[in-house]
Length: 197
Image 1: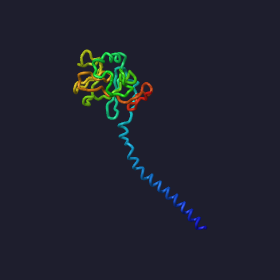
Image 2: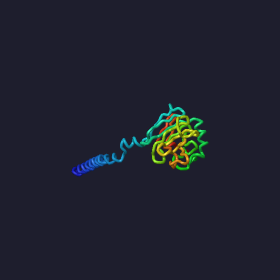
Image 3: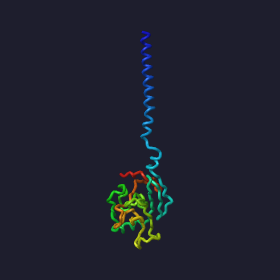
Image 4: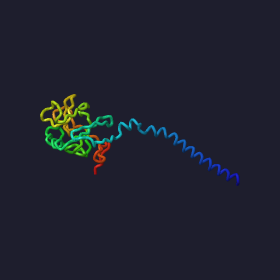
């Protein structure tokens, strides 16, 4: 009887010890496999959202940031700029943004969450060149009716200050509006969608 008790105790001890050692072994061998599934720091940095402080941006000024390896432009517009947009509806190819080049919350006359700030990917939708920004008062040879916008010197595509493409140019669609949201009134996070309700 005494030997039977010892055998049972020994059996329980060996079973418990084997279970613990086995569990530790499974965990130790799983760590390398799990770590290969998580993205590297470089991958995270490329696709990570970018927070931008626009507090110092004056009307008519544009700042450039990089998100996912692409240039993103943030332009602060004034009341005149916004009122000029409506007068260009007949001159642009997709005035109502029917082609999906923007999130639903930016599918409006000014193609933005906050009318004062335009946020677009600075890549021409023709062949991927980067257009230049020209305000109405900058020196340019874009005609006396130029109200400001973006001009791609590679093949002559033009976009207004809502990123809408003009008719008669090679670019087929409006500039892309990336996912973004405001945090407070002076910070924009590019790469995260605004929750709409």
